[in-house]
Image 1 (cartoon, rainbow, N blue to C red):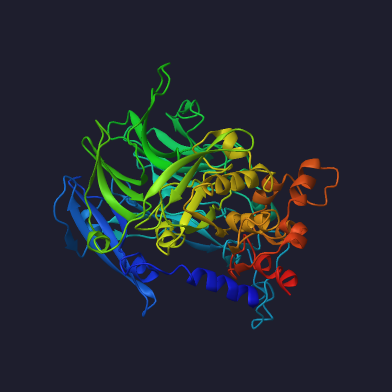
Image 2 (cartoon, rainbow, N blue to C red):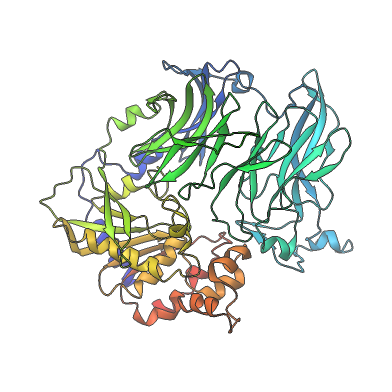
Length: 596
């Protein structure tokens, strides 16, 4: 308890800000913009705005449309009537949907019919829980039904009885099952594995179902990694995202296009490119995509040469200290996107494809921003201990005065392989942190896409190695500035960032006065035995801890923060979720032994 009190006092001691600095209450009043698509005539954008209601514990949602050329937004009551329904086949004869199907019996009352009141789960293999849900034996399947006069007929399950989920859990959606423009084929994403085989593999595939024959074909059987996000152009050419390595969820992600005869990887030639999402251009000759680069997410275009011998050409369209966070659609020479930066939540923009200039269309939060002080963000480049140049984002508090000294927080990103860009979070919000009077130091350390494949991959199997030096290089470099109060430095992070906090607690040598860890990995052995996605642990650790002849795995497990608690001597606030099955609850509970 004493350690917790010290932390809270430290946080409270810097609460010297004006009423216009961002507060948690202000953050929750911001509208959350979610684009739904372009209208059928491509002249307007339809979007939703949600605002949380704390008292009712739910969000209130309204719908709007705004011209793609700009102007005033109009509130609408029936957004679906303005949008094309991509669930209906192009010829209008069929409609697809998804619903749960009981595939495996896991409840005792379903297995033992004479025990209808029993409430146990029965498992004989791994994959008994995933993300935040226990496995109940039900899987999402795709159904197709005749569609006539606006009504669907009897629906048929098109997936084999032994098929796993589509949409993929936990985050898949309608993008996981789509129509071929010929209206005779449906392409869907699934991983045809169950139990332990599912838990150790990332091998999802694209399957094509023929409505006329009922035959299903695996389109990506030769690839053993991820195949996701299928999308056709009007010519029937299929594009999707692909990773090559099975078991590696953070492999370089490329755009593949197939014309039905041959397939082509459009982005493999650029080592910096890790594609986040894409969309076909209206002329069917190229694709627009988003990828991290230099600490931001930017918009790119890549040509599709088809059967010619020409190489694909990649062009960057936008640049600046902001993120292009999603692609909504194309209207002539304009692409509609969403954009954020560390001071602004997502809003809808148009991008002129001839010059990359962006124009803000929606202004949902303008009135709120008028009363909120902004935080200056700055790029700095730090030389690491192995002589690499590392980008570090520095976020300054509103009204920053270089003649004063400020408490400073080192922010540790999760993932571990996730980009640290100009994103705007309603949870880990840099503007909110800095607005409490802190300088935030956010390094693009090893393990982040957008700086080359080698940089991204170096973190795997070495969580406690070079990346820890990257963190310390960042805080040491920024601490040389006269406005950093070295006596008031803290360190915060979640997930892999939480692990980083635990690891740095054992080796920071007095740099920090406090730590905050949210859902962090503390003990590698217990993590290996209780986490859900075993492909993650096997890849990131290089094997199991009992493989004593596996030098890579043994080095990995030797870096567990639990091995270094004897060196812990600094107050730490630990926050842990009870339903995080990837970083299970005991990772937050185990430290009680040390704290006692």
